[in-house]
Length: 385
Image (cartoon, rainbow, N blue to C red; front, side, top):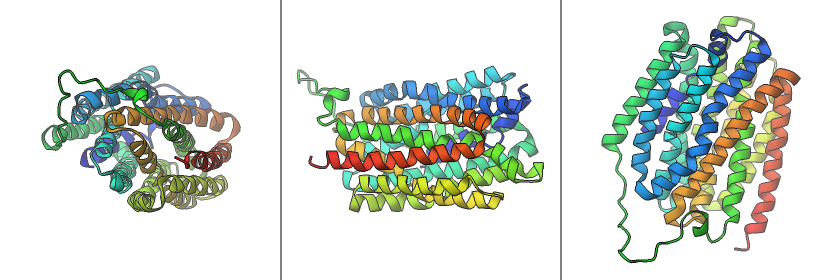
């Protein structure tokens, strides 16, 4: 929890000032700033989506702690280098590098999911999500406050230093249960997809995770620009944007463990359907706000509803996959979520830049409602097993 919190704080620092950094690197046109912000933000998730299944498989084979050590050290280096970018192309390239080398929070979810009793998995993963969301809460707040004090580049250097502390803590403090080595001459069990007897629940969760992150992240890159239309004082834009981004994280912190415990009792899939439906309803009024505090309140309520989704998705996969391939399947889930995080900012930036900010909220509402309906149908199809 500590390692995930510190790495997420460092990674989310840039959210409130990313458009300002893009402008500082030479991009001047309004629509271009919005689109480049989406591309730079999504670049990390694009590269991470490519390598997440590989890291999951290597974690099954060589241990999950080793993957956490690799991720924390790689992210520390990448974040420090981002502070040295000289143009927007270098920023995008370094964000790609951060995705290739990183993945600490997702790796920690794999570690916890595979070493927790199945009947407590919803609560345990919800508790982990609370730590991750706490990082999402603190990160944008610091990102809104630090650049005016120490500068944007120094903020990236500080982020790299914080992640390096997480690297040291992981190396010395994390303990992983050792699995017995395979018996000599024994038949090698099937790995990967071949080792999963019923693939339908896992495929459903892969799609749900991708849809969730696409819908959620389509809004993140445009929040700063959207807040600028609501706040009269330009000096308050980044601070207000930080509060808006952190409000959703605060709601998720408060609800993740509770929704996870509820899901352990009434079923993880039931919580997934309910959370998606409530989120779709809450997106509509966000398109009609007239003041910053209204957007903060609505994002907080949406965070309450979203808090149980990722823990429940991971729990369904954990229940549906044998132990020997659990890391690989959770790796595919992370890859699917990263795919949504790639498409979301790019689509959100494009729609926001060409059709208006409010259109992004309406389109995201439709996606969340469709996801709720599809999961309700998929649950009924899989239930006989």
